[in-house]
Figure 1 (cartoon, rainbow, N blue to C red):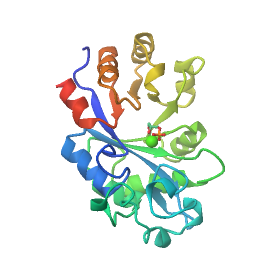
Figure 2: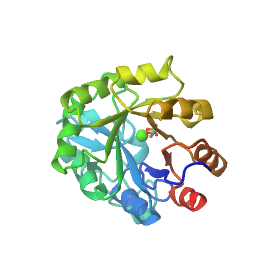
Figure 3: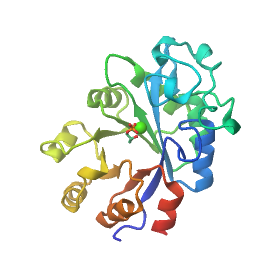
Length: 242
Ligand code: G3P
Ligand code: CA
C-alpha cells in the first residue's frame, strides 16, 4: 500500500451499529477510532439546520413526512432511534450545532449539504454559521452533489474547504475543480483508478472516496493512495490499514 496516513471517515457516524446521523452513531464512531466523521444536513420549516440524510423522516424515525414541513420543536418530539433497535429508543434528531458539539474533536468533519431539488434554500449560511460558532473551519470539509451550493458556500467564506461529490468523472476534472476554486474532491469509489489519483495529486488535489465498505475495495483504494475513505466499516477499515 502506498499511503499510510489515510483518514478513515465514518459515514453518517458508525451507522452499521447505531441509528445513522445520531448522537449514538457519532459516539460509536469515536469509540471505533474513526479519524473523521461524515453527516448530512437539511433545513426544517423554521430554517434550522438538522442532521439527517433523506428529505423525509420516514425511513429513520417513527414519524412521516418531509423535514421541510416540520419545525425543529416538532421534530424533537419524534423518535429517531427505535426503528433501529429498542435500546436506541428516544434518540433525537440533532441540530447541526449539536452534532458539531459532539464531533468537534475528530480530526476531520465532513458536512454534506443536501440540496438536490427545490429545498433547503439558504442552507449554506446556516452551515457556515454553525462551523464558525465552534471554530471548526480548519478541519471541516463541506461537500455536496449540488456544486452551485458549494460555490455559494465558498463565496460567503473563502476559508472553508469544499468538496464536490461525483458519481462519474467529469470532463476535464482538474479544470472543473479549479473553476470551483477547490483542492478537494469526493468521488464515488467506482470511478477512481490509479490514473485519476495520480492526476489529482499532481495538481495538489486531495480525494476522499465514498462509500467503501468491502475490505477488498478499501485495500484497493489504499493501494491507489487516496487521502481518505468514507466508510460504514470504520473498525474493519482501520484494522486493515494498521
Ligand atoms: O459523502 C459521501 C456519501 O455520503 C454521499 O452519499 O447518499 O450516503 O449521502 P449519501
Ligand atoms: Ca452523505
